[in-house]
Length: 344
Image 1 (cartoon, rainbow, N blue to C red):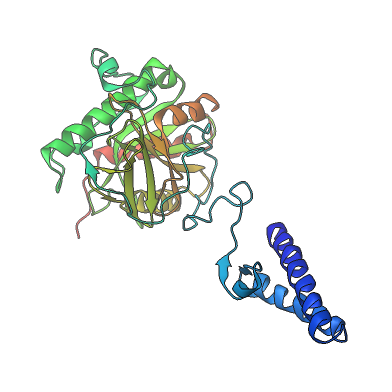
Image 2 (spheres, rainbow, N blue to C red):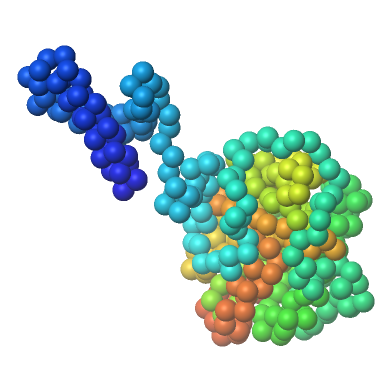
């Protein structure tokens, strides 16, 4: 609104002095009040009704229109469609997942070609697969299930995608152990998504990579082991694009963002209405480091963030305890591992 007021004042002034000059030359100054009123009304309609300003110099270009440009620091969503936010947004990143200084967001698939991988490395976190290769997959008493177990034999997935998915979940568990998060929180791995009406595994056969209980929330974590490096991820509607920053080309294929996490969140919240259920999509780094997530939001308002940002979120969480009100919900999620899927 402030920006539009500035445009209104500037446009009104430019129109008024030109019309007064024209009045003085043609009519001898007899219509100045009427012309000033017309200038104010015209400016108001143009700015506040049609959201347009006019190029007012020179006079011959008076009716050539251009859109109002809102500064990025006033409104940062003008270059892309607004994205929904999580119904209970308690997750906040550290700022590394934004695209500050990277330029405007592309409002569509306007990349200039394709490359197989990032041209340059991104931010190196110390949690790249090469650094974790010799670290054993943890198996602690407060871990229910096994990381990656739900992907073995998964329908509709290639062996390459299964291997990448298992590695992502195992590396996530390794990182939680290295940062002492597994000692503070309780986790359930490869948890079947519960049915909407009955607390049994859903007929669709989907699962949640990790259900992580802290002192104040139960996080539903969906892990992505996508290409990374000096890249920028952004989504237009439900299509996810990966831009190689150095070349402006698209890295790999466009990915359609599924609604699995939206369904999982809705179903879990339906069964545990008193618990703080927080969904999040976590991007795991590759050996090229981690890229930039430019306001990436999965369907249903599920936020996405890099592993390093999610670790920062967890660092501010209180330790889990079985005496907490939502502890029973975490225990019941673990029970889903021993149940069979419902029949269609």
